[in-house]
Amino acid sequence: MSDRSHLSTLSTSILCQLLDRPQTGYALKRSFEDTPMGHFSSSPGALYPALQRMEKAGWIAGRIANPKALRSRRIYRITGRGKDTLKVSFMEPITRDNIIHDMDLLLLRFAFMTPLLGRRATLSYLEKLAGHLKTYVAELNEAARQLTDRPPEGALALQHGIDGYRTSLQWAESTLLKLTRIHQKEKKP
Image (cartoon, rainbow, N blue to C red; front, side, top):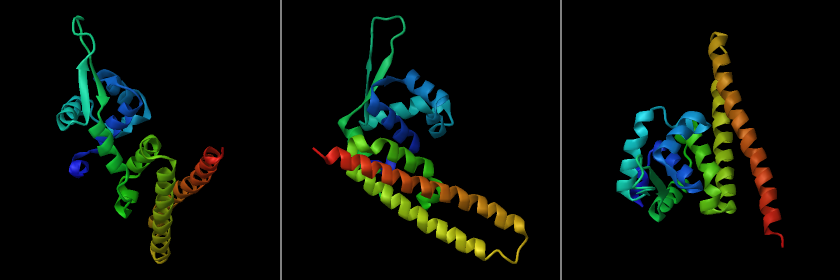
């Protein structure tokens, strides 16, 4: 499905929020202003054009909640096509570039994928994420070993990055264990 090539980070975060319940544009705007979802939209003026594009693409549908009210509100819900588009984006392979530049989007995928794809798919995703993180931490450690003849500041700055990725790796591994236990309990009669 080629829809994914048009699914921006903002569109992904909007679709994820609409998975929970239909919402007005204003409620989505407040979510971006008042919650950690704000990380996915730095421009309040981007939301309404995104909603229009997404409705045109068929990923969401809006309806006027109370047309006779003085101030009518448009309520958006995710469509079947929107869910399918989100599923496809959730199943995309994790790349090294994602690990370096899109960790927030990878975590957004993780946070919302189980209702759409099931726990087994989430566990598989988390295993792959941990594997990519482990590989990247090893690459960074090798790069740090090569900085021994330079001033220490560069190596210390790199160590900050290594520590951050190592923390993400530890989180992925411990979360994988927790979710595996939950999955095993769910499977028992």
